[in-house]
Length: 85
Image (cartoon, rainbow, N blue to C red):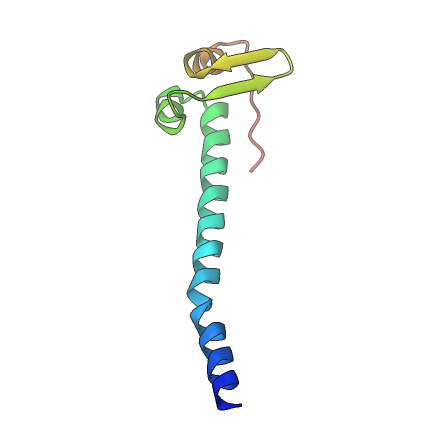
């Protein structure tokens, strides 16, 4: 019985940092997403260029674009992103 209790306590206390790391990672992803949408709304393509991977693809109803095309579209006056944070 002692072995079961000790095992249970090790599992319980040993997984706490994992949950905290998961919550921290989730918050970081949400924050990056918020920044990305704000940068798109503000047309800050230099920051977006650093964020997007060189081989990234962007799929929209009107087509699929590579990184440079997407940044060009964001920078154009025709592109209107609204940021709702």
